[in-house]
Image 1: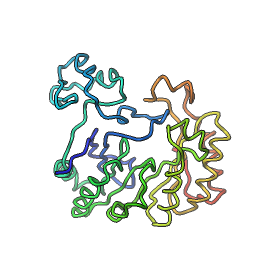
Image 2: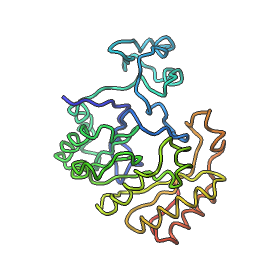
Image 3: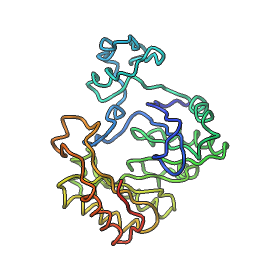
Image 4: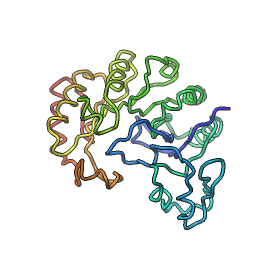
Length: 279
């Protein structure tokens, strides 16, 4: 029976794709983005136990080589997440497809579909294939929110059951991309072109950083020329909220100004990305 580490499930979301959607966040990510807003989803629990003693509600214990979470006792203070030295969360449920589907069904009358995110949900590609097959039987759409690290071309089964992919294009210059994410841009850029050819690119997204004129422009120019009018292109203002304090100084203590970001959205539209806008 397939299981996957689920960080959380949001029953109703209107920011994770078109319409009202149930968003499923999986644990684990191969990137280590300096600007990650939920860095506690990057790694899996290693069972060190540091979070157990620090839990004021006694909702954590050790077993099965990891921290075990009692959701009923938890008071959602997030002391465990602040304590963890490994970028993990003990509030992860290893769920079967049937268990995830049961939660989706509770919201099914009120949603247009599901969006899987993370972390990086494509680490669980076999799980997604089975889950999406079941969600489709409910008459709902299935979207993937991805950093582009998974080679979609090598496993056509994923796109066969997926209605679209929301793809991050974090950077195109190799050194800047590695600094931002710990990985190079090659696979995400390959996926950008492949998803466009396959007609499965739901949206592309680029974060704009304050004061990084050359890096911002290079990424937006590259992406806009390829995307054209095929899908939405979100120009996202960098915001430091949730970003690890150790990295804030590297990217800026303040959020990107709206006017500064709009300059890049205008550039994108002039280059043919007619559906570019700032968020």
